[in-house]
Length: 300
Image (cartoon, rainbow, N blue to C red):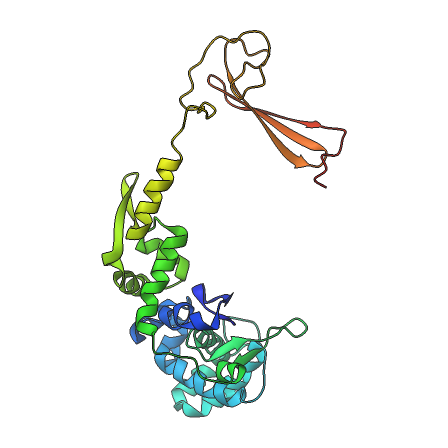
């Protein structure tokens, strides 16, 4: 399915993983506005909490989308009109004010748009097949023909952290929060659910973390990268030496015109007819030049 997910942006993921990429991202009520940057001034203006706005929007969306699909902009207009009568006089006045969030948009419509982003992770809305230039929204329960299973949300947060570290570790809780698009408070809550299964890995002056089972894999991969007798010399540890006659066709052979300085020639294909050559020297900065081959390399 496709729905608003990580960083409140559209993502495609298995329906079975909605708890990971959906509800696990939702923090406690007092931190819901951490997910949608910019909504706080509007909440203060109307006197609504993010939880109340989300409840009002969900109810309106359920009514407007029952049995049909609709683009986000149109849905926001209709939902805002449906919500207005449920507000008190002061809130209605603010709700109808012109919005600074977008031209020709009321504050209420803008606030509904903010709330729609959270109805993706909540399991209420998903995207369906594009129509012309828009991506219509539909109720998840009507698209699937059933309700989403919400029974495993408690474990989903820890599983999300595990998958993140499997792909991007070693990493930190701050980087996880940036990747997931959640506030640091909620990120630490999710992180703590599998913290006992992590190991600390030094990274310069700081430290990052891996899942414990990854540590053995990392050690094995480092072991596998250790040079053997048959490997080409490592440029960072290769000694300089006087070169004999011409190039012997080896990576560390002498380069004509370089005296006793030995280095590498690096060739990069920039296009079917253009090559870039870079010479890595122990004593000089790399020099780069390009040449037209005059013959197609067969890549184009």
